[in-house]
Structures are given as structure tokens and as C-alpha cells.
Image (cartoon, rainbow, N blue to C red):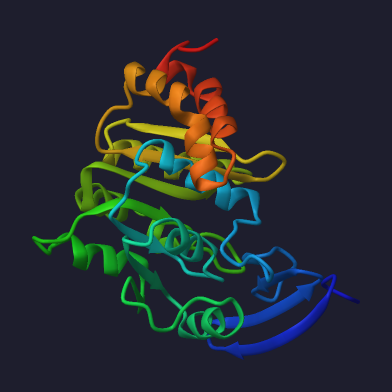
Length: 267
């Protein structure tokens, strides 16, 4: 039985599982031995975001459009990393990825740069890395992007209370965390949201991904006020042109789906 559309151009296996790279026309995909795609890349324009959930994760730019330092938990094929390197040439990016073989495939097949002064990739557990950074006095991130999945689901260590507590402590005052959650597993989703809201004192917004099971949660150190969202409505078209993603739609959906939190501001 054929598992994928396209051609398998790489296949390997380690103690952590299977890795497969599949080409289908211009699109190259990363799989962990199952049909769902862990990452996708346009081979003609590798820095663009081709999966809808990755574009939704970058709705974080609505809340902080000028990040100087970013932490990415979960590399995969590096879609978010390449996007950030392209749009924020002065930004410093730390990445933590649990699987060393995933890092090698990202370098070899997904055009993630191996040598770039702006990019530091660490192999290890996301929770342990965040805890370690939390205890450093000189570390603060303007943006945390958490997308840590294997072939089974979200890595357990990035869903515990201590992880979200440490994320709160790592963010700068204007910082934002964007995390990819799996909304179809309702008990796990509710548990994750409860923990996020506990760590961030309720300062969170949810953004379900259209026609997908993903739900993006944006959590902030500061309350998202009505005046900030009103200003965003005036500038969102400029942000869309700058960052080449559909931020007006994300802003509309954030407002519509989080009415109890942010009120009826626009409609």
C-alpha cells in the first residue's frame, strides 16, 4: 500500500523513530513514518510558509512585530526558522530540537543553514532547555514558538506546568508565546490551556486553524488591551504586506473567537 503521494527521497531510522522526506512536485515534506506531514517546503521559495498552521503560528507578529530574539522549540523541517531568518535579518534565533537526526535532515534536505551567526540549534529536550535558560540572568526572548511533535503527538515535556511557568519567565515584557496545540484531543487540549492560563494568568488567545485539528494559542506577558487591537486593525494591512502572510484574517479570527476576553471591538 502506498503511504504517500510523491517520491520518497530519503528514509532513515534511529532509536527515536523513522524519518522520511517526500517530494511531490515543488513541495518537499517531512514525515515521521506516518501520513501526516511534520513540515513542508516549497523548493522554489523555501522561506515561505506552506502549511496553514505555521502561518497561524506567526499571528504572534500581531502582538510583537519587531522581535529581536526568538526561541523555537521543535525544528522539524525548519519552516518557521527559514521564514524568520528571511524576514528578520538582524534577529537572533535559538532552536531546540530533541532529535539529532531531524537536525541533520533539516540541514541536508530542507535548506536550514548549517552555519549562520544568527542561528543556534541545540539538540536536547525542550523543557530542559527552557528551564536552563530560565535561570540565566541575561536571557530574554521576544517570541517563543512551540511546535514539538513526534509521530504520536505533542512531546509530553512541553505540556507540563513547569514548562509554561518557565516560558513566562523567559519572555520579555512585550513578549509572546505561540504554541501549536492539537484541538481534536479535547481532554489534552483543555489540560494544556488550563496550564497555559495558570502560568500566564489568563492572558491567552486561541486561533483554530481552518479545516485542521490544530489550535494555535497566543499567550503574553502583558494584557492585550482594546486600544492595542484597535491600533492593529489600522495597521494590519501593512503588516500583511511586510510579512507576506494573511494577518488580517488572523486578526479577524482572534477577535471573533475570543469575544469573552477582548470584547466586541470591531463587530
